[in-house]
View 1: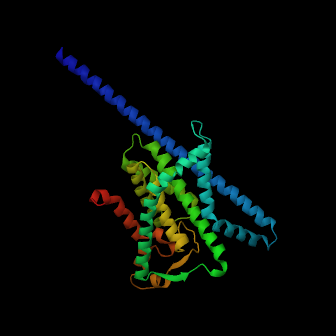
View 2: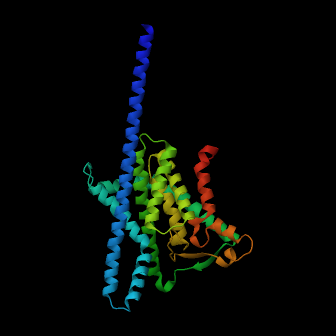
View 3: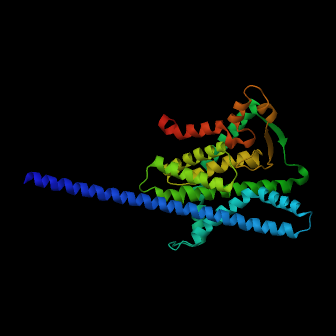
Length: 330
């Protein structure tokens, strides 16, 4: 009789444990499905948005007076390539606006929802500290490149004759990079991350979100393997930070700072695009690539012509930042 009671108790415990595991598995699969739907809808919106912009650009260029058709196609390619960052930034912003506007469960107005995303408290307490750290990292790394001789400072690019036009271009570039970084952080480190958070482990979650993030970046830009590795490490770091702080603001500031320091401030390429910013800092290809010894190593260390986002130095710093809690560092 006693053995039968023990057997029934164990069977009941097994059923409870099995039901709990099934519920966890269902929550995890539901979260993964929702994350994939968000990422898939964002990818589809990027393709549609790019097609719309390309159609408008092609129409206006082809309808204007110009040379032969081949030349006009080159003008379309140049115009679209020069505005690629802005186009992707508008795609990210419009996707967030549409997602908020079309949410049937939203109890707030679209304006109040946008204000909550860009709240002054988040900008002050999360975004600005992340921006400060990202700025220090970016400026310190480029300063080290200048000291090593791999890069050279060529002067202040903005001329007094076209000061207003040049400053306007830099300001628009900064605004575009801010929108791209901030609203994509909201998509990946807020919406997608919250879908995965209930039942997933932090390591698995960070890896999964970073893989989705790199897939979107491949869709947006023409990137190499070193660039993708940097993006994966940066996404992994920002995902772990968002899990810790339960907010995406710090990561948005950190990533915005790196992009702004490298591109509109120092004129270095990011995400496969070039831009002449406020100061001209250029990689010295002759010194880095033609040297018989150490040239290849220096190019890999600094990113070479691909820009600092392809640099092993930046990847090493990101890995150190990821491992900092394990190493007992602050």
